[in-house]
Amino acid sequence: MGLIGRGYTCVYGPTAATVAIDIFEFTPADDKPLTIVGFTIGQTTEIGDAQEEELEIKIMRGGTGMTSGSGGVAAANGVGVDASSATSGFTYEAGNTTLATFTSGVTLLEDSMNVRTGWQWWPPPEVWFSVSQANGGLVLRMNSTPADSITFAATAYVLEEG
Image (tube, rainbow, N blue to C red):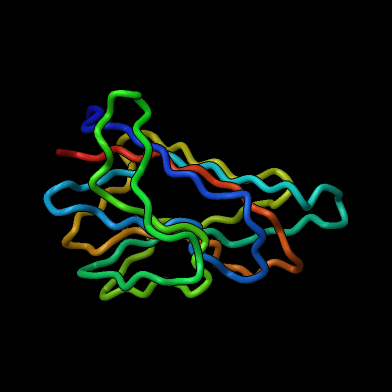
């Protein structure tokens, strides 16, 4: 599998979270599937050993549809990694506290994040996750409720066809 399409970044943060959140919700444009090639998540408030905790991380894709959540940052376009890139066709929301729901959705990844060290996901191209408009969307979710308020920042790295 080679690199396809244009590259974009999607940024969230820094924002305090006290409940499970959809860190990112992606909605592809018509006839422009998108592929997630990496994520990073960090935080700035849980510094000492006594504050260390593990939070569940999930990546989910709609089977035939997704209903976006709410309570976070309004939909935005990805930012081109090349200054001459066109605006992305897809949109994303970040930090939704009302979680997205799926029609026949699937879980693509279950992992955990140590809040002190953060989380980075850089899979090989053979296992990048793709989503088209027919699936509705794709979500990176912090599925756990933190023990106390944590200020997160995250970035998604996305390729878009078309």
